[in-house]
Image (cartoon, rainbow, N blue to C red; front, side, top):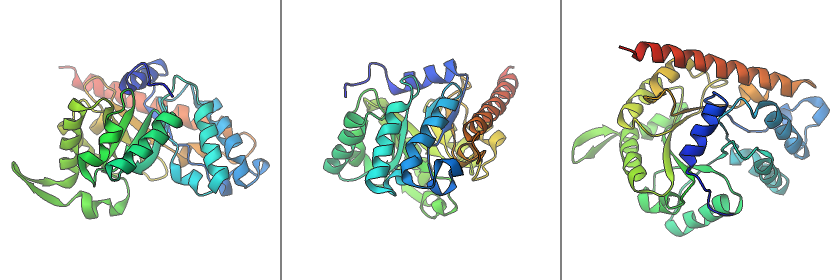
Length: 288
């Protein structure tokens, strides 16, 4: 694939403004919960995803397929992932949620596969192996790299909240990650962002304060019961943007009948509109 002509962040902002939306739909298909008329086998993943995308593409700023939901079905699932990437309209960025990170040579192989061959616009990575492990992703101009910072699951704090000692003093590991990501953003060809779960709005506010200009991908809204109002207040940047609010199950399975795609559209529109009301409120509060 050719290198994208515009930076990922610019493409993301364009989609946000065109669709007036900070909503990202997580394409995490589970055939066991598909509407009965589609069947319950992995062969239905492509049809399910196509219906969801067709119903919601004018309401979102991005899509986020999670690799695990496709790998679980072997060759059929991976083929569905590739097909899903191709059916998403070119104006909507696609973030592959793979949480990768390895030795540099292995990361280079991941980057070639997911960026060059499969043409995902962005990818999620973990920072545990440091900058050299992420450099093959960071060197990709036009792509986005979202670094796990504070995840939405309850067990994330076992490591992410640990205090780490640095030259300037002590701070939680997740804030050290945020600081490193802010530094990488100034030196990388790719656009760097962070992943912070909606279930921890206080942590999100601290990350936003430390990284005022980085895009933040926020999972955990909807089925994981992250508070939307607190998330929006904590995560918006100075322009009222910079926040990618990801919802999966609450949209994908809003309905279980033949009208499942229409129900998904209604759920997406409701989430978009609710976020926009909160954005407007935040803007009014910010006016002196």
